[in-house]
Length: 221
Image 1 (cartoon, rainbow, N blue to C red):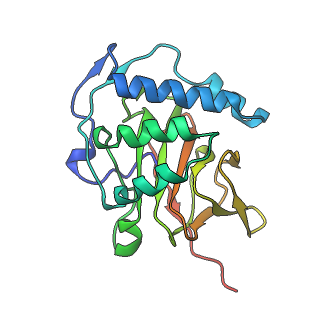
Image 2 (cartoon, helix red, strand yellow):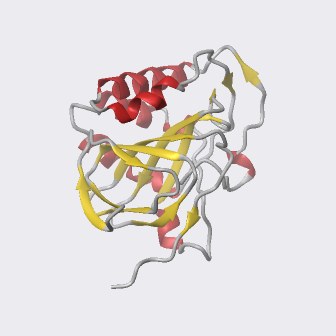
């Protein structure tokens, strides 16, 4: 879904690696791991096992997107389960490199006004990782993320806002905060929000994190 296809020079990693993390990025990584470890289900185990043990940090250039206007609503709507992590994301949002994978004409301008993500760990995030990528997706209300697929195995965990996911049997299913949503390699999937914005944690797992999701034509009927 997410890791490649960076738009704009401001979203690129500009400076080299370091062993000294930005305090905000370090706190965010700690809260992210704590939440993941608190969730049930064996599907998370391979992702946590591949989390980078030796912490190598990068300095990045922050960048902003229109979708960040929804962060106050996301913060206000976070449940107790994820409120600490959501607070950390919102507090440090101005220091992150917010990105988009797609552009017009593959998607329309309204989608781009209500879509963005940033990578915390991975090939481009502040925490260097070559096997697992981790970051956060933000969607505005009434937004449909088009059907797509990628080789990387993926996990989503909604943190604030309830959205619906389409996968496998092509039935839309509503997923609340704290749900663990697993996409197998190359499995088509889509997401849509209703009246609330969505903030979700994502994980990618692959030997090739430097890949881009491919959009898939929508099903008819």
